[in-house]
Image 1 (cartoon, rainbow, N blue to C red):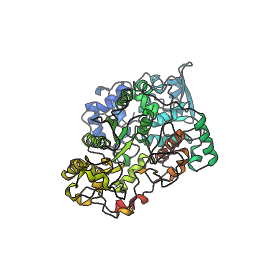
Image 2 (cartoon, rainbow, N blue to C red):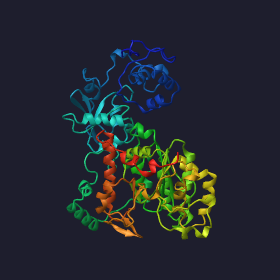
Image 3 (tube, one colour):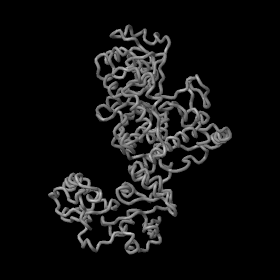
Length: 573
C-alpha cells in the first residue's frame, strides 16, 4: 500500500493521534461483520473518521487505514507484508483466479469476480461465503456479478442510491447480462442479509419492466379497452388468496428477511427526502395485507408512522400488526386503542392520539398526513416531498359548502365566535398546525365543543383551518368557493365510477386507473381488497416505477400546479 497524498499540496493534515501510518486504499471493499461493527462503533475508529474528514479523498483512507493498523484491534485487520498483498480486485495481476480457484460445484448459486472484461467463475452458497474464500478477512475486494437475475431487485432495495446508479451504469455494459453488485459499502446491507433465502412474494422496487404480470398495467393506465375487458374477465374467474396474520407471524421471526422479502425501501433515496421527513397515521381495522402493502408503499426510514388498530379488530390481526411495527424503529403503535364508530368522536380521537404520539416521537418531521388502511398513494415519496415543500406551511383541509348547522345545533354556540365549517377528516397538515390543534387554548376549547356535535371529525380540522382569526399556522385566508383540495382523490358522485358505489363513495375499479394516473391528488380513497384487485396491483406498479425512474435520474417532477393552489397562495404566516 502506498501512502495517500492527503491534501492537494501533497501533505497529510496533522497526523491522527491513534495512528502515525495512514494508508491509501480503494473504495470497493468487502468486510467481515466484526470489522463493520468496529468501524462504526469503536471509539478509536470514530475519532479517526473525524480526522479523515479533513483529508483529500477520505473514502480511500478510512477503511484501508483501519485494516492496515492492526494495533487498533479491528477484527481481521491485515498483519502481513503490504508489498506482498494480493487483492482479487487487482485485474492486472490475475489475483482473482488464484484466490477464487476453489471447487464448490454443488453450491446453490453462482457468482463471478470481474477481472477487466472477463469474469472468473466462483461457486458459493451466498455472497458471504464468496467473501469467506479469502479466509473471512477484511482485505477481500471485488465486484461480483450475481446470477440468477432474480436477486437484482432484492439487492438493489438494500443499497444506497449512489450505488444503484453506479450499478445501473455498469449493467448497460456489453456482455454483462446478470445483475452487477459491487461488494463493499454498496452491497454491505445485502451481505448482512441472507441473499440465498428462497423468498417468494412481490418484486421490490427498481425492477425493470412490468411488476404485474397477469395484466398490462401500462395499457390499463392508457385506457386500453381490450386490456380492461381482459382484466375484468380475470377478476371474475381467478380467485385470489390474501395474506393472513399467520403469514406475517412467520416472516417477522427475521425482520431483515421480512423487509427484504416484502421489498421495503430502507434508504432515504435522496438528500431532499432525507431532509424532509413526513409523519403519517394509519387507521386500520381489517385486511392486514392491504395495510401492510400501504405501509410498504409509503415507507422510508426518515419518515414516522403511527398505527392505530380499531379496538373491534381481532387479536390475531392486532398482534400481527404489532409484530410488523416491531421490525421498524420509525413505525409504532398508537398509545391508545379506540373503538371507532362512524359519526362519533371516536373517529377523530385516534388521529389526535397519533398526532400527539408523533410530536413526542420526533422534532424532525415537517408535515402530517392521515390515512386509512383502504387508501393508496398516487405520488411517490419524492413527489410528496416536493409537493409539501411547495405548500410552504399551508394546510390542505377541505371545506364543503352548504347548510350543515343541524350537525352543530345541539352543542350550542361555539366558543370565541368561531364559525363552524364542514370538511372531511382527510387532511395534510403542517407541523405548526398540528401543534396548534393539540395545544392552543382556543383549539382545545373548540375541541371540547365539537365533542357535543355530530360527526366531529369533519368539523374540527376544517374549522381551525378556515377561521384564520384563530391564528393557526397556514390557515386559509382566501375565497372558500375557489379552493381546490388534493389530499384525496375521492369520487363522491361528480364523475363516473368504473367500480361500484358504497354509501355514495366510489370503490375504485380497474377502469378508474386512467383517471388516477392523471390525478393531482396525493392519495386515493377507497379500495377494497376483494374488489378489482388489479387496480391496487397496478397502482403499486405505478408508484414503484416512478420511484425507480427518479432514482435512476430518468424523471423529474414539476410542482408549478401545486405552488399556484389557492390555499398555498392565501394562508396565515
